[in-house]
Image (cartoon, rainbow, N blue to C red; front, side, top):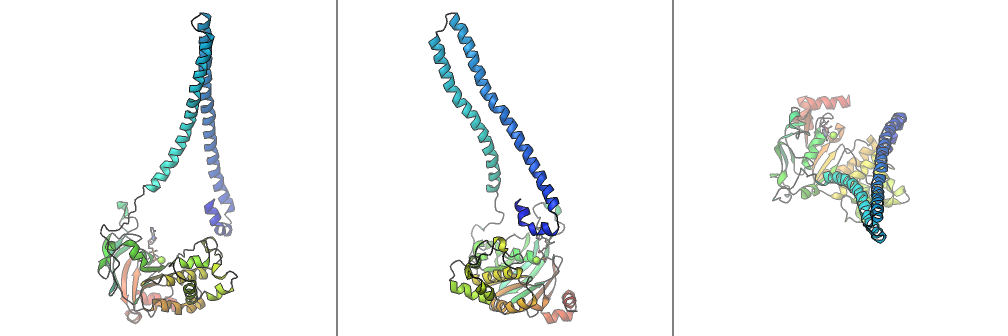
Length: 381
Ligand SMILES: Nc1ncnc2c1ncn2[C@@H]1O[C@H](COP(=O)(O)OP(=O)(O)O)[C@@H](O)[C@H]1O
Ligand SMILES: [Mg+2]
């Protein structure tokens, strides 16, 4: 139900309400059947327990009557005996019901345990070091990576193969290539969401695995392709970059990200609620919000992964200045769809099918007339 409700636009536009109802129907049917089964078992089990104790009492009465008639037992003793039996029966009955509840709890406990027992696969080094003060930059050296490296059988098609390039300190490095060539995967490795399988990524010579993870991530601001918006106010969403920032600083980044006209015209200004997953914002507004958040984080390394892809040409131009400001004195990796936006990057790395195929400046790559020139010409023809 949660999935269908959050995807309601998709379902409506593909008029798949019927299909979804049927799917829900099937799940509901299974649930109904299971509940009936459980109910039937209880309906058998509970009277059975009660029945056994009643049969027990009946046997005692019959035997008691027999013994009384033969003068081997007094009526008083029988009454006392039955009273004692009843006192023992009640706890036994409660105990069997408790067993029932215990069984249900054990199932739930088992499920929670599988989550609690999940060991993080990416962990800090036993003796981690602080993030170094960058002077030279980030170096990728023969990086090989595959998402499904754990199941060793299917490793013939790694996502990244022998990736080597540097992201020089204080410069803008652009990463281009067709979609699916592995650009986003590289950003995930730099932020250590995944560990690489061979090769290394070093920050001023310090291997990524030696650096304290939280410290590493504090020094990197990512504006990703999939914008992440919290249910809350505009301010909450921007403060996520640095929770101790003042309102003044928040306004400053809003202005830099070209969101100020929008925020100013809202009656609640910074407190404007964005709705669940930002449903009350346009695609471009969400993207600008995530740029503002990254601006506030004020990290020395910036990664823009198609950060301006959902902006129209005009809004892109409007925030280009902000982005230029953001990138100016920082070490940055920019992935852009529109090659016009990266054409004055200090360095361009071209990827194809998980490999680096060319690198250089715009002019040198155009002169080479290879993959980059092909991509560039295709966009401007
Ligand atoms: N989380 C993931 N699990 C498995 N495969 C993935 C995952 N993310 C991306 N891939 C695969 O890795 C390849 C590279 O993807 P990606 O780095 O997102 O490319 P790009 O950003 O250049 O479009 C694609 O073939 C994609 O299907
Ligand atoms: Mg991508």
